[in-house]
Amino acid sequence: NCGNITITVNPAQSTPTVSVNGSTTLCSGGTVTLSSTQAHSYLWSNNATTSSINVSTSGNYSVTVSNSSGCSAISSATSLYVNPSNPTLTAPSSATLNVNTGFCTASQFSLGTATTNDTWGYSITNNAASSYAVGSYTVTWSLSDGCSNTATANQSVTVVDNQPPVIYNCPASFTTSASCDNPMTWLAPTASDNCTLVSLTPDHAIGSTFTFGSTTVTYTATDNHGNTSTCVFTVTCN
Image (cartoon, rainbow, N blue to C red):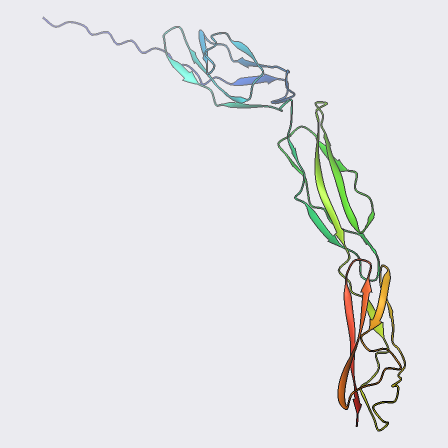
């Protein structure tokens, strides 16, 4: 006998869409509602089985829906990001600044950029002065964001004087036919410094006597930060 075969084709479940009632970026403690289009049953990626869910943690959320015939379809993922309640702020690494040329202060400098894991409309400022004298300082960086979070971080800043004194009118080397026992004279040089000149000292003073032959005379200029420069010339006594 020949029998009849009945084939039933169940209707396919259309792909659901997820609507977001609010922003997908939240402050810590906030929630947002995700809702699926109408279906017979729901299974969210967080195992919820309702048509809408309230979420408050970062993640990717999707929903699998089924019709009354058991056919199912899955939505595309909706990403949710929750801004941390205690954002981190990292100050730039310690900075060493040289004073500006001809000055005893540092200005118009860059201290680098602080970094954070914050994402919610944040601003970062610091309390750096516009100029610093030679010395060591602490610069405080501060963060505030649209979630009323704050954070601070400190940066060490050291300003150094790397400029030696400048010596002017260094005498030229000379030869004298006068007796070596006679006091030798020359016009003494002068010096200045971008900070403070401490001394300008010769190793042979004007009026010194010299031995026969050539003698090197050295003037050493020293500033208050230990930088030095020298003026060197030769006195030859025949």
